[in-house]
Image 1 (cartoon, rainbow, N blue to C red):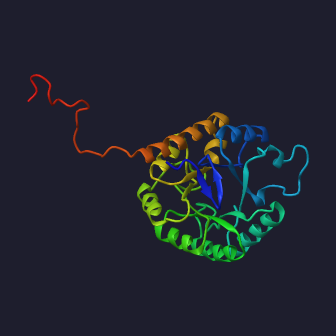
Image 2: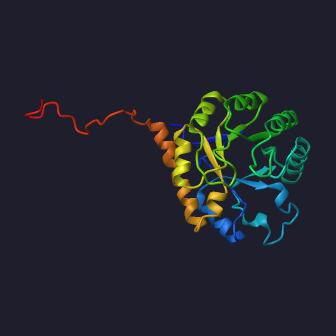
Length: 259
């Protein structure tokens, strides 16, 4: 089976992508990132000091081999999202961008019209766009056609920890998008949620709050690593069919006295 996740030409052995927000200390963040086994980490460009490269700066706590995926968290319109994306590319020297264009500060749900608009602009400028979107299979297909490097549907509202709210939508979306990875982003609360997402056939899971706000973030990061791996293995193995009634685990054919 294909064990690696390939995003924008980058091959990673881990299918877990992690974030950097909400940790109590930079040291806890660094330990959790390492425990997760992730090879890509997302950073909110509007919430970090891009120019601070001191001995204890935010950047010094990112494991050296992790791919930095800048994101446009906090942007509520096309112009802001495009501006922040360009800033990220200029400062971090990467074409990667996790594109978030939010439509509402309460739900943090995406503004899908602005998302498509910003995607078209950034793809034309050579960005490799990983698009945070809702769980709409039709919109996901439009994003794929627009040239994104990955489609990232939410499982539930950002930071809610509610798990996979619409599994059938995620399954339909996975079937709709054929040429780029589908990575569940937002809403995962614990390792079983990550496993469920992977069992639906998605290519990866991105999470932040579920790890950062755990009682023990480092241990939760490790649990998430195993949850993603278990879910992927179960999907590739192919689950047993669901049955309406019980079926014996051991056949009775050939047993003396069996009818």
